[in-house]
Image (cartoon, rainbow, N blue to C red; front, side, top):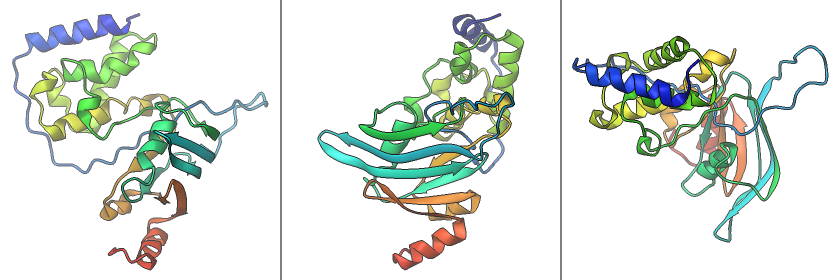
Length: 245
């Protein structure tokens, strides 16, 4: 068995021994199918495991920061295995909601329930990519589990394949471009796909054109979810609000 420190030491040693340059990655559309959630779902009282159709459930969530109310009775349900997009203007509470779901902020009231395991990707990769090499950084979150070294390395390699960064596996993280660091940050949570039959993701964006990748979209305003629907239903909702979509 191998712990986080031992694994990182081995990966860093391989990085120092490798002088091969990082090959140019293929152009790809990254659709991060990740969970950004809080707590394990409650176990079923039945002897047989149940399969819930809801991966994330938020009910009447309220949270204030600096004396200012940010979440004002937020309600949200995210279907298991879906890519759920969260839209809304600056200051509407999107980031605060995700940080609450990720366990980084504590709500004053309300309920949150989510499937596990979970992962979180920050908007700025510099807040997440902290290890000296790409491989060590992707493996960092696996240190909480007891795993064979070969299994960890396989997960790291497969996670990097998902973002076309395998050729940079042993490269020093500080030499990466901003876009490459974003890919590494996504790969750092992609291990969830190895331990879950269906991966659920909540994706925050301001880009309306990215709705084509989503299974469902929610619009947030004033600390509440105003509307949830399919991408086409959301486009119709946004047109009614005067948005150029």
